[in-house]
Length: 365
Image (spheres, rainbow, N blue to C red):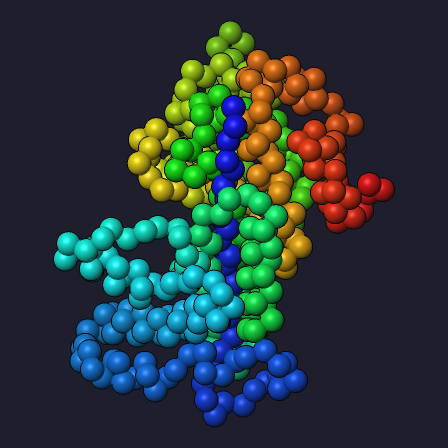
C-alpha cells in the first residue's frame, strides 16, 4: 500500500548574547552576539507591566527576553525564505481563536521557542564563556514530506543558525526526530514491526550515539524503562529472553497494546523512543508520530541528515513488511553477535549510512 512518510525535527541549543556596550570576549568570531537580546526593551516592558510579585516579575521578564530573542531568530529564517513563528505569535493565535477566530494551524511553520530542560553554561556545571548571557532555544520544524528537498531545507536551517549565531550544544541538548504519515499515524502492524525492530536493535543503535546518551534521563533505554523489560516467563518465573520479548510485541493485536509494553509514562517524554503520540486516543492529534529522542544535540547538517534517514528508514521498513515476516527476520539475526549496526543499516536500505557511520565507529565500512 502506498504511503507518504512525513517527518519533523526539534533542535535544542544554547545561544550566546551580549548587551550593547559589553566587551566581546571573542572579537574575532564574526557570528552575531549583539542586538539579539534587548535589555532596554525588556526593562521598559517590565516598567509598563508594573508587576510587584517577585516570582511573577521573573516569569514575565524571562518571557519578554525570550520573545525578543525568538523574534530575532525567526526574522533570520524569514529573510531566507522560510515561514517562522515565535511563542508570542502562538499566544496571539490562541487569543484570536478564543474570540471566534480560526483555530491555530500547528506545525506549518518553523517554530522558535524555548525548552526549560536545557541547562546553559553556568547551570550545567561547565563555565563556558563567562561573559556571555546564554539563552535556551528550541527550533521545531513544520511537518515535512520526506523528500531530498525537505532534507535540504533542514540542512539550510542548520547552516543559517550555526553561521549566524554563536551557539553550543551540551549534554542537556538533544536532536529529536518525529516520523509518521502526516495526520494518519501508523497502522497497527507497522507499530508492532517498529517496536520489535527497535527492541531487537536498541543495543546496536546505541553505538551511533555518545555513551552519555545511552539511558540518559531524557532518553531512557527501553530495555531499562519499559514494562516489557520487567515481565517474567510465567512457566519458569525467569526474565523473558530477548527473542521472547520480541515475540510478545509481535503477538499484540493492536498498536495500543504494543505501546503499553514499550512506553510506561504519560506521555513518554523520557524514553529514547516515544510511541505515545501513536495511541488511538490521539487519533485527532496533528502529531501522530514516533519520536526518536536519543541523538545528542547538534546543528551539524550532515549529522542531522544521516540520523533523519535512519529514523525514516526504520519506519518505512516497518511499513513494508508484515509482522510474520518481520518475526522471521528478527529471529534470524537478533542473537547473532556478528550482526553489526552496519548490517542493520544495510537491512533497512541505507548503504551510504553504513559508510558514514562506519567512519564514525572506526570500522572498515
